[in-house]
Image 1 (spheres, one colour):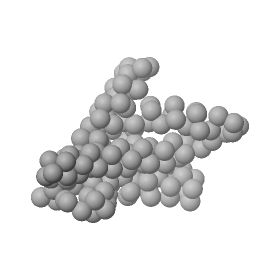
Image 2 (tube, rainbow, N blue to C red; image 1 turned 120 degrees about the horizontal axis):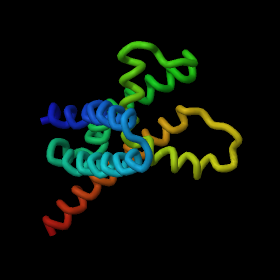
Image 3 (cartoon, rainbow, N blue to C red; image 1 turned 30 degrees about the horizontal axis):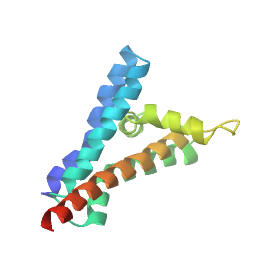
Length: 151
């Protein structure tokens, strides 16, 4: 049962590669629409994860395991190495957060409005926080609906 949840957790890689293709061929409002669609999907993954794991913390850790691994890879590459690795690890870690990046750039512009400069990995951290928050909201919605159903 946890294998299905891990497949859901891996799905942002596939979606990221598809978004990369779209962004290379079209640009503009499409990135925002894709970001919103991705967050709706990620909410659904969080909602559906209750069926596989009834422990909230365990579900969040399993469902966002690739999210956590990727933020660590990005921070190592950006802060320690000062560049992205030119291999599959460097490329895939960037693709993982590509789907919600349209929304997080808008959030970043609001948050960093008064700063003169900001780093690209700030947006990856915002995407990380946003993905976990949306997943948590989906899981909590399912938990609440189950509790209301039992009453």
